[in-house]
Length: 157
Image (tube, rainbow, N blue to C red):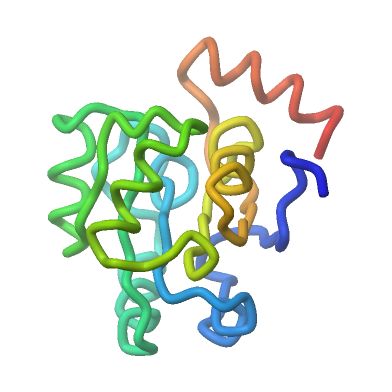
């Protein structure tokens, strides 16, 4: 098992169905924000994301946004979507994943991490012991460090 190999791959989060999550044994979804739910730094979700969240919630899943961003960035975005959040999560370290799962009393093996980055979302989810769903980044990167990581990811993906 590679720590950089996701369990599942999808083009975008809205392609993931409740059945896919149930098959993975997930009860709690830990969702990345930037380039998974919205463009990097945007307060507007991608088309279809609010409806996807509503449908997934109706299917019985708990959802939490987990981000390395500041509270100032994530709080209004999460509140707009009606989701709890963990900010400054220090992905890929387990700190934020653990905090989110403990808030719901759900074990790592019953969580699924959904995100677009190998070195934060996939690695962090694997270290935590979750199933990991990798999506393609849906927008351009604005941060220099992330641009560098994306170049490295091309050799691994």
